[in-house]
Length: 363
Image (cartoon, helix red, strand yellow):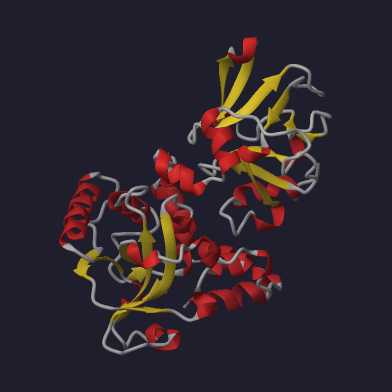
């Protein structure tokens, strides 16, 4: 069914090219000893639409699309699509439970599907597109059952929850071209998700809920931060340190894109508000997301200054001064070590697609 929708859209709009070349390879994020992490398995209809929401979560190590259950070993995509093998399209999620608990993964899962549909998902019909939670142990089973009951009692849906909770048996990874499809073919993926009806349904059902809560960040403990961050990044963000001017990564960066917190990934600044202040540190006239930049009074070193920190990550970023240009008159003087730059060509693959319009709209 997915192929039929894609053929229709590409015939209509003349779109035929995947743009996966600039996307980062998912394996860059996967530690060598990933096998030590527990696994969660979810069937949510088209696996193309299930990878991205989970890959954005801090604490998720890996997401793999594939086929679960069934009576045919190592099935192909075409065999599963025929509906004769007994498999479900599914994803497997490896996660660090110290950063993201299983019940949080369930919350994300529920918000990607129509759990009342027992005949498929949206435009994709057939048993291979049914929804299911496949538990790997008794703890997952209990948490999943409780989560399903709570959702059913919430009154959000007029029909009963049809999602099955079943024991995991076997999982076969899908063909490579299906992995990270939203990264490799963002245009095709976007058209499919919208054309299938999934996107509009989720917006309507969860319109009263801040969907960014799926990405709610829990700050790791100090031991994990020391492993995740470089010495300088840790010194700046956790100990209110200051990096040397003119000897840092972004002070002279002129590429278009956004700057996010190195710890939490929350959006902080845009290249469109960046300017050369002559200070030797990245300088901005204003935040891109003001709610993510918090001010505190800093009276250290015999001075009174306005410190800026990230909201979710609670990272020390730098200071803001009232000597900037333009209408704001502000200069956000920020440490490069507290930032990660996401260039505009990687915004979709990195999960920040909503900010792409900043660099495509007429200025």
